[in-house]
Length: 127
Image 1 (cartoon, helix red, strand yellow):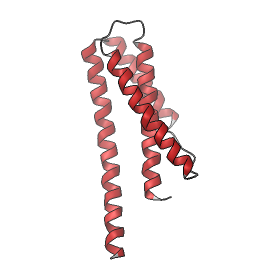
Image 2 (cartoon, helix red, strand yellow):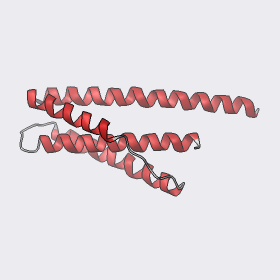
Image 3 (tube, one colour):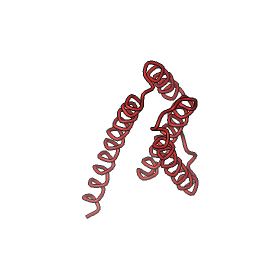
Image 4 (cartoon, helix red, strand yellow):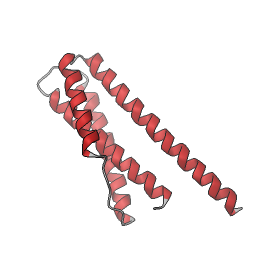
């Protein structure tokens, strides 16, 4: 598969995971009085935007988008429920978000670094 499509597929999977996790967190907090819910709703819109755009581009290139595995989703869901059950304060929710986004940022940066290396090798060979 073309590296750009592989990266796009990865973005799709990450956006899907972020979207589902954020929706689940909002559902958990539905009956609670957390001020952070507005931020979560805004983040959800961002994930939806990345999800829709990457889905459209993948389908345009005749690639069937794949999501992260069910196991990863279940583990994130269980972990989130346990953490929120212990402490559902806005600061704890913010901590969860920061940890999740940091892990995602590190992971996607590794992917970008890999693809940059692939691109540099290709460009050098082409010259």
